[in-house]
Length: 389
Ligand SMILES: Cc1ncc(COP(=O)(O)O)c(C=O)c1O
Image 1 (tube, rainbow, N blue to C red):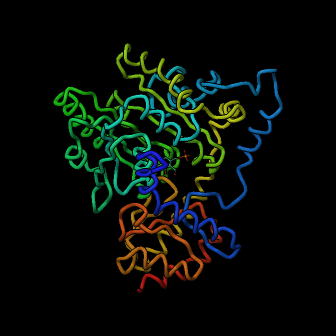
Image 2: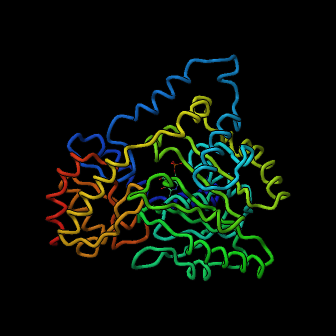
Image 3: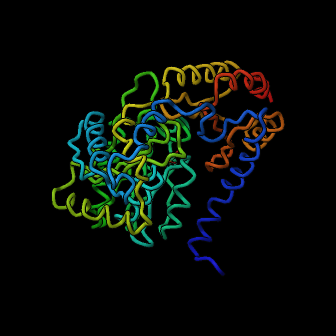
């Protein structure tokens, strides 16, 4: 075999997603296609993003485009923002700047997990956890969300934990379901993790994957599990709130609630691991832009309008949907019970949704609300007609 075993495992785990991705890239070339698959923009980028980058483009010192690691102004802006949002006492040294949430997840895993360690991931959940774990020589172990309302099933996580568990990954607001988990769920999870860490004599880390933290509907409150469990790291991406996932920017945040000695050891390990992972920092332009970008966001009023229009019309037509509390996804049961058949039939009519097979839930489907209102209105008659099949 010419590639490593982990490359083979990672490839086979993500084959169905890459095959789907290639098909959708071809679809995207068709101006008449209605593409509701990935969380990609369908309108020009926010002026808040392009203004920030334009302002920072002109070098203001000779080292403006020198090697950049975790730049102080970026760390300060992130720590300040997190302090305001989560009410925890973050300091700039707790923050590692990364290339989106992807980079922050890879960093968190390299920071605390060794080859062969088990990592618990949610199902349905983001389809890149598994290949990332396999490529890092880690072992994915799935824990299902509640089958009816997709709330956090703490008992399922408890059952998934073994003496080899090192990390549990949670994601709220959740892709693909749009669910937000509350403080009670986090407190219950913290109890389980604390107990299991003691039983097995090994600390279990919680990685809170929060790229959709600022994308919430109806003023619903967000609580991070970091408030309940000190051994938590948060990964974040600006790719969602700016709807510009191609401009790689995010961070990993250590918990201010960690014991002081451990917090210091982790802080000192961040930069060397980022370097060893292949210079896992955002580029100079994005780092300079962070302070200005902290307050830029997609239009949540418009996103809410799109959620309400689709959710309302499809529910009226007979669909069973999970009403999104956050993220830009709408998740539902495929009419007829087979998401592949349902999505293929719509694709033949130029409407592209994501089948639940991508999320190991073949009876469901996902619609991305990053489509325009015009696309939604064009697709609705076919979507409504498909409810009767
Ligand atoms: C749950 C979840 N985590 C992490 C990511 C990665 O985000 P980014 O591409 O901005 O790094 C995504 C992207 O879709 C996601 O949905």
